[in-house]
Length: 300
Image 1 (cartoon, helix red, strand yellow):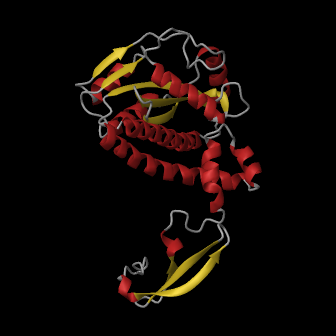
Image 2 (tube, rainbow, N blue to C red):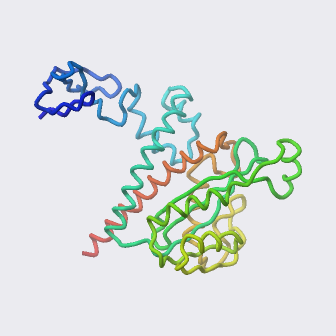
Image 3 (cartoon, one colour):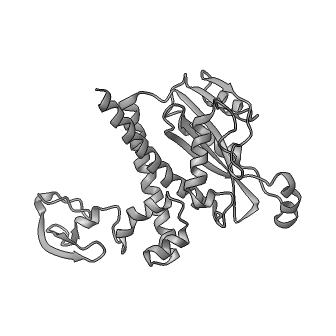
């Protein structure tokens, strides 16, 4: 059966097959169609997310490499393409991952119930230079470590770099609270009103939780010293009450090259960090979801 015309929305009865063509980007024969109503041509490729992409072969391998501590430059060398191609494909894959992850979270909720126990915290990185820090907030389910949401925002330099950063780059606004408010507004559509939150003793966390989840319970825990020099997310304690969020942040440091502390890599633009996180989160959630399904079926 022929599809409807994407140009004039004519019904399939007015669309006829018009041969095939060979697509070099992935070595496939694609069916072509002609619309009798508007006399325009289209094909099965017209309805694809990858429409007009020249090198669609690299999409899934690139998605995998970006979650395995490979930088954009190294990915460009690996696929023998320009850095511009990889940068554009990063944006494309991020938009695709956001759509897929939204559907995936709904599937997990339908299969395993509501996300009623949640942990969240901030991860500090930088854009361009350590004098321009970025705060990245991550929200995870406590038991499964499913990542429910994230946001990134610029913050002013602090500590020994504060005076140097102000002298070199001037005033830098703090957008973390505004962006975190936006994240929690989105989470109201995903989390139930009676959700239990666990966080460290950050003074801004109770405010945002109370504003968007007034019926929720909030437990705070004192931060602990990091167990690994240069990482800091995994804590040197016997039983960490914030293990789920700390382990998730430690995995981000390890799996994403731009987040490693002792590394050559930094994010040049805060938007690209947001895109990279979206790709990693969708891959991370999908892997955990498969394990949850396997465990459920084995128990049955």
